[in-house]
Amino acid sequence: MTRMMKWLTAMAVVFGLWGLTMAPSEARQDDPRLDALFDRLHTVDGGNEARLVMTMIWRLWSESGSPTVDLLFTRGIQAMNQKEFDTALAMLNSVVEIDPKFSEGWNARATLHYIMGNYEHSIRDIDRTLALEPRHWGALSGLGMIYQDTEREEQAIEAYRRALAANPHLPGAKNAIDFLTQKVKGREL
Image: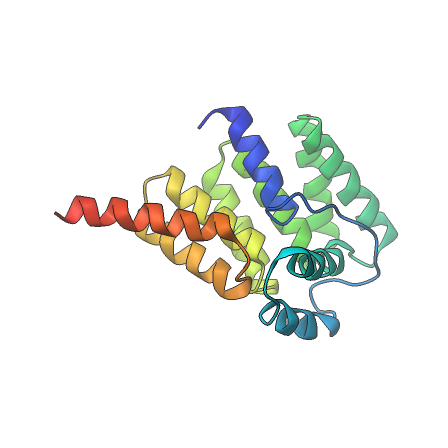
């Protein structure tokens, strides 16, 4: 996978896999509204309604509740989008230092590490993300991508399955599972 493709794929993970944008709210991964939204995500058929629920969840995840952290987070994402990786890393390092309980800070830094090819750093940040928000389908999908890139297919399949358990509206994860399952079966023959 080329560096540009990795960057585009990672950006899709940051924004919920389907080009969702972040918008301000006043919540985070411990917001009590998340449980109801996840329940709804599992009952909608898909399409626009699923995208709407995913956007609502991502909005709740994306706000730390601290103006300072929110500013650093936004600037870190902007720097990442502009491929200013050193600046992005400095901003996101500050985010997780100031607010180590903000899961989206860890997830954004994990994405940056993935783009930069620092897979082990990315995995550590994904682990922190998931410790705070086990349903974080973006982090789980990112973990699947790392395992897929490093030819750990069985671990990738498990990560993608966990992502689908959190969010059943991820056709990319379904396709990856199908592809990797066939690859693993082919090796066993």
